[in-house]
Length: 265
Image (tube, rainbow, N blue to C red; front, side, top):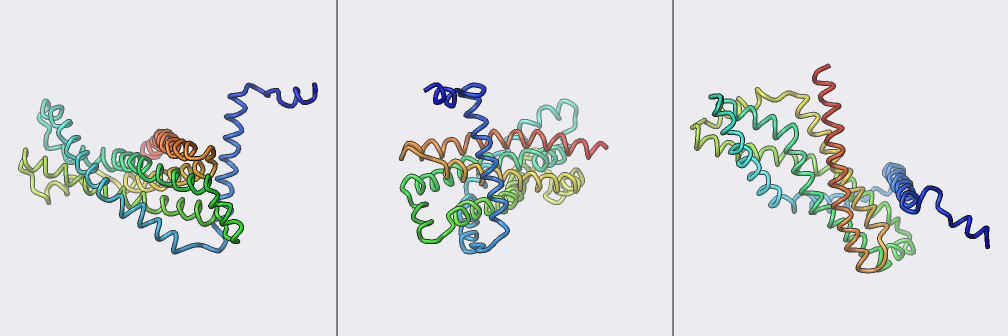
């Protein structure tokens, strides 16, 4: 009896033990993804289907969000610049803000809410209804078919959506600037491209790849490890969104430090 009690006694505390156990499970999950991704079968048809679901079906929401972000940020920046008589700097300011930070961050957060929850709920429902077990019985690798395909699709499509969001946000900003300062389209985009550098675009795309991978792997992990029936499916969808957004903010902070170190080295 004393040996059983000793084995059940927490090493640090129940919460800390649960946290580190979950961290180890997540690490093994990510490690398995990088082991599975290089070997056949590659499931190209499923990857293309997921790219369509993640990319094309997200366009209406991304378009509206990006357009509003461009208009709102321009309106918010104008009063501050007008105090110094520097409203001509609006295109440059908007382009730097959108391409460096706001475009990738807004797109990733929207995708975390829409795509991450969808992946978590879909895989979670398959888990609790034992469809994943049925796939294993049918000699199908469920990890390869469900996790690898969705993670690759999010990793590929989020950078594409970021470029699209940047363009839509800049067009929204141009409409606002054109109405107030009567700036032509060519003049606006000349100032936009003069203000940004290759490092800005490159770092934005690299961040987008990391954000896409995070959204995909977190949604798959939470769904793949869900339990307790339909309640577990809801918890998996919710946890996918919360954890993805939290990690995106952490990654944005780390990326900012690295890019600034390179920029001012």
